[in-house]
Length: 76
Image (cartoon, rainbow, N blue to C red; front, side, top):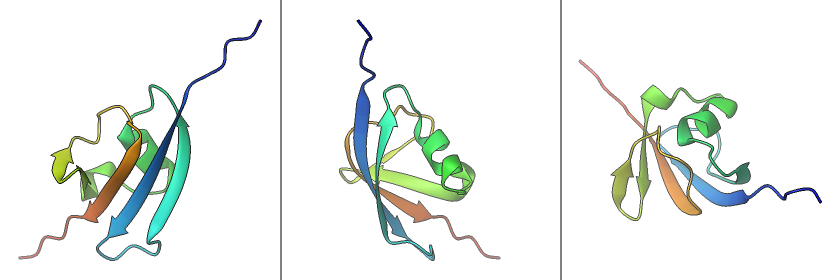
């Protein structure tokens, strides 16, 4: 019998100059947010992730739910 892989369902909301507003994805358990961002063509070092009003590291493992992806804008 084949073992079923566990999928995590996430909803990403993009803020700060992205071409996309929202995206829902299913990713394998054990996937990191940085991998999800890279697969979408987003450099993980250019964004801040927020879940339940709390910033989370991009190298955390994906958890189900909604995550806000905010572009970091710096100037000088």
